[in-house]
Length: 269
Image (cartoon, rainbow, N blue to C red):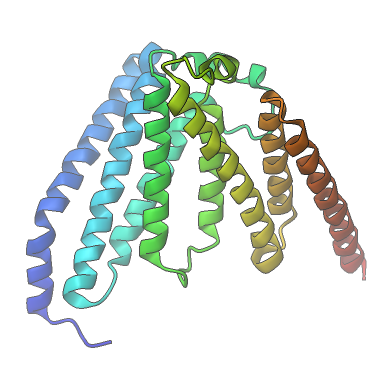
């Protein structure tokens, strides 16, 4: 890689100055929101929901900075991408703070937390989740296939799948799926996204376990994600899909138990 001249660096700094100023403004806005949340705890869920957009906009501006770096100097701005990745994690955490990060539990266990978002429409929830998923995919693509963060994105995808599920009011979901409901389209699209993301995340955790980590907790998370997806199908009275997932989950559990025994045996030698 050719050495980057001081002139190129200065030109790059001038080209990204607007985006850096925008980031600084958004970071201050994020801090102001967090201070407000400390003072007004009753409004915390709604303010944290709004904070998701702030964090995602920060990420978008960091991605632009890296894109300009590639265009001008033929090199990614890893520092900007890392800051963008951290902002995405914050957006996930804000949603987890509202609706929990619980994977395979009955809706009743976290229903009260979801009800705190009642002022937020189905369409707004879906738009937020869709934007989050798009931003995650965008930063993964920007890093590229050979990134050192490849497997850490599996965790991000899994947490995204879980909050996508948990932010939906499962009790009103059936009524909203009536074609006469004004919430029909965003609800159906949201459910499709949940199914796709939970299934993909389960497979990705299994892949991470097999090809990289060999960590039992990764395999357990994969199984929990499958079971969470099965709960969704059961809730929707989709018995065929639920039964297929039950068999898949059981097969994975048998494999997990076998691997645990093998690991324990290896440790004893």
